Image 1 (cartoon, rainbow, N blue to C red):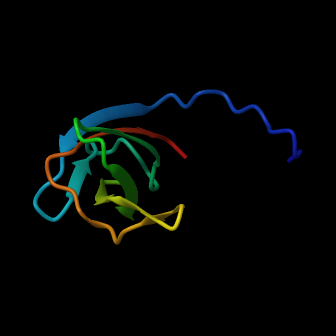
Image 2: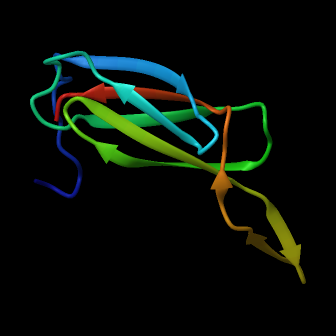
Length: 102
C-alpha cells in the first residue's frame, strides 16, 4: 500500500439510512438481513438547526446494526483562548449513515 493512497472500486452493496437521536443522544441503524457478512464501513453526517458544536461517534458496529452517539458542546472563551465544554447527549439530531461492504 502506498502513502499516496490506493484505488478501491466502489463496493457493490451500499445502504443509506437516516434517523433521529433519542434522549440519550443515540440512534441505531438496523441493516437489511444478509446485507453484510462483516461489520460495514460507515460514514456519518449530522443535520441540525443548532449552531452548537456537535460530534458523533460509532459506539457499536456489527453486520446487522450500527449504533451512533451524538454529543453537543458549547464553546467558551477564556482570556482569548477557546475552550470546549463537556459533551452532553444531543437529542433530536438527524444522523445520515451510509454503510458499504468492508
